[in-house]
Image (cartoon, rainbow, N blue to C red; front, side):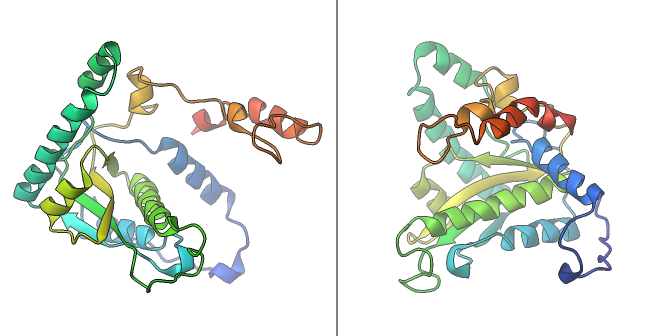
Length: 252
């Protein structure tokens, strides 16, 4: 399924704007990204495809350009089983945290594809990579963690553009994941991703499709100048535009 990518003729300096087709491709990728759990196929991911996806992740923004991430590529079934066992334990604890009706719904959901997906990827954060003082992290100490999250998002979007599904498994205790992957104590696991080709992508996020939650309207989430300030005369036009564009994500 791998395909050779042609190098664009123009350099970054030649274009301040993307073409209409390129712009539409970006929006299509964003609005069609899905968290995949149960649709994985065993087909291997060609190395050229995985390499491109990893490069996209490696080009995520990072605080102070510290690039705190590593990528642990997991193909071993034995290692996957260790991670899966850690998920089972954490998932049972999680199910007991909800009230009875919500817990019943929770238990009906498939929340991982650890064993089914041909590749698992763990994205980590080395908080000491460039020393104790990091440009941009002096006030907001979590910015390095957020940087590795950006790498996960880049990975996810690039994978979707390649027709590859990704599922983020967060229901694992950090220490258990570190033990399963032999990650040093000082290295923080950020994202454990199940990766592979899929039989299909859902039209909407699976949790929305299964009735867990609905997407919140964007206009309900906008404040202006001050927290809680929902509307000003100056921003009324934007609010109206946002409401008018509520079907924009569904166009793709």
